[in-house]
Image (cartoon, rainbow, N blue to C red; front, side):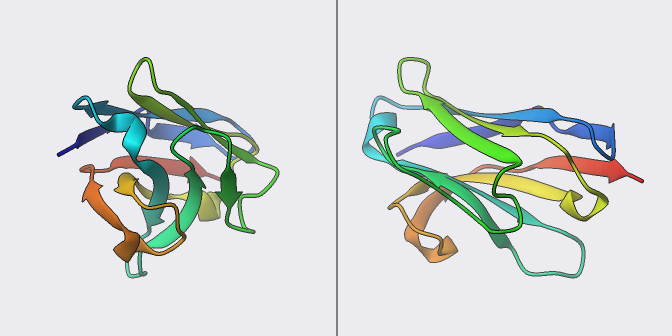
Length: 121
């Protein structure tokens, strides 16, 4: 079992940057692909980015491609989401999840509690 804790959210102006972290407990962290999803009020949870178990494979939603970068440090049991050129439409609660490499939320068995990102215009 894996427990995930997100951090790094906050309020930032449009065009700014934030780096989210997803810290995991458990010795099997490297056995899981990790993804970031986000959910804005009144909307469904949407896929943002995913990284494979080794970190050698990544995949991004079109809406964040070229602006966001996902990475992982298996020695630190941590996954990062570097978010640059932020836009107001990036405002959402961001969740990290552990599971099988996929864009589908159902492929991930373990979820964090989320961290709020607010981008002001």
